[in-house]
Amino acid sequence: MMVSAGRKNRTFINSAVSTAPREGYDKIPMDRSMILNSNVYAVIMAGGIGSKLWPLSRKRIPKQFLHFFDGGTMIRKTVERISRSVRKENIFIITGKHHRRLIGQSLPDFDEGNIIVEPAIRDTATCIALATTFIRKRDPDAVTIVLPADHLVLDEERFLSTIAKGVWLAREKRGLITVGIHPDRPETRYGYIQVEPSVIIEDAPEDGASDSDIALFRVKTFAEKPDIATAEQFLQSRDFWWNSGVFIWHVDDINREYRRSLPDLYEDMQNVHAFIGTDRQESVIEDVYSWIHPVSVAYGIMEKAEKVYMLAGNFGWTDLGCWDEVIKVGLGLEGRDMDGREVIMIDSEEVFVRKPHGKAVVAVGVGNIIVVDTEDALLICKAGESQKVVKAVEMMRRDEKLEGFL
Image: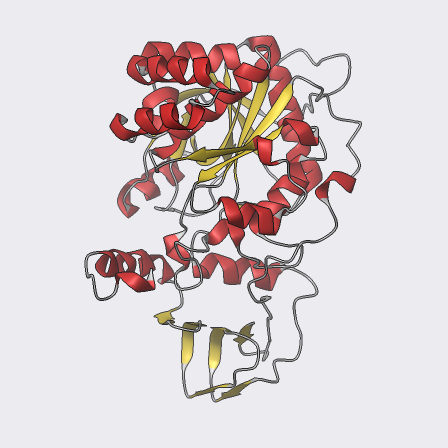
């Protein structure tokens, strides 16, 4: 339960962690206004740890398998969202071997044959390369949508329209498509995309899949997560957008870029491709991962690609990358205010408490703090500084006496 108390004495409940299944995602009707069809696939990346949301997000149950708001776990909501436009048999999840069991708990009706297991974390370029190899084995003419498992989208209709336009562009322009989010503040937690200043005007397809109000730009470059001074410059320039981590492309196009920019990884995946579906599949993947060096897809592929375009994403996006963001989103959602009878606030303002049900909390004479309580760990931090939690996680990682709390 999360409770916030402010000048208006607001109380915000954030549901306790839950992996209980809801109604099957396969019962959600397809959105027939979309252009997606049998050769369109989705890859949901679910291998992260989400350490910035410690102590709730841990190695054993990371962020994407947690239940923050109504509607199920983050990964379940991601699958349900994209399954409105992509056939359920064309949705893949790629995750670590320790998290495969959690997928079954969040999505008991998900096809186990569409779960790809990485033996180790090797960053997004390797993750996407492996998923692309599996999809290319099934369908050499596939158009693929790549999505993080742990992002929140408030306007799903707008999101799906953006995805549909991206699929059409990937087919017609034979380039790499990404989705950018217009920044409203200098943010150091996101990578950035710099675009050309002019909007590209493209011919609309006959089936109406392209929405004219979803702007398309040519990408100039990608930038890694900046320091605060650089983030402020990005914001002032007005040509830098947040990188949402959403990508759309034809498998031929992304394969060509891997062959050109990461040739060793490309050759490794050619080897994997040959053994998919055989009794050597798992051992070959483990061998390949034993010598691969981690590299992000933004740095390894997108920065060097020949034809990259960005769609302007305007669909209420957040990656819930820190507790301040969770609180901001939660207070902005209607219907989240309710009686916090287990939390007593005395002379306290802007106090946010996330706690298990059945535990009483009393706050006296405090303000602007975040309290996150779990069975074995407690976080107390100043509101607005929860992004620094990752520093504490790094300290615990270096201390064998504290490593068990990660």
